[in-house]
Length: 105
Image (cartoon, rainbow, N blue to C red; front, top):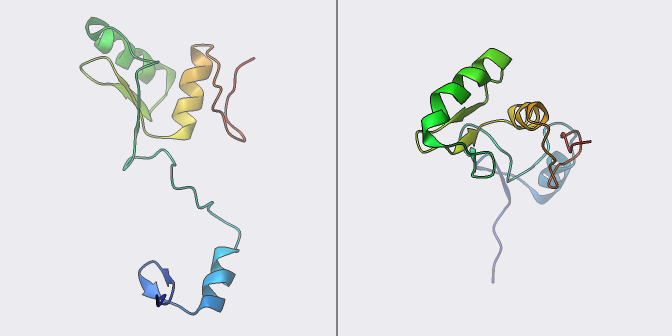
């Protein structure tokens, strides 16, 4: 089985260049990161559908911009910062917290 040249951003590069670029410090290569393109829908932080408007208003008042509640009550989080702020504001623990994330008291 023949293995082709590695690629960086769709461009073919040599193995040496690939390994050098891969080891550069900077943005971590995390495939499961939370973001606009891959939001986290949390059922654990969900609210009753009748409370959605109140909770969205409360998020805006607290300055949490990367999270909002969907019409069915599910909490949609689009950034780690918003997730940390939301968990901290509700004094919740996070057993999946990574380095620098809010894990609770």
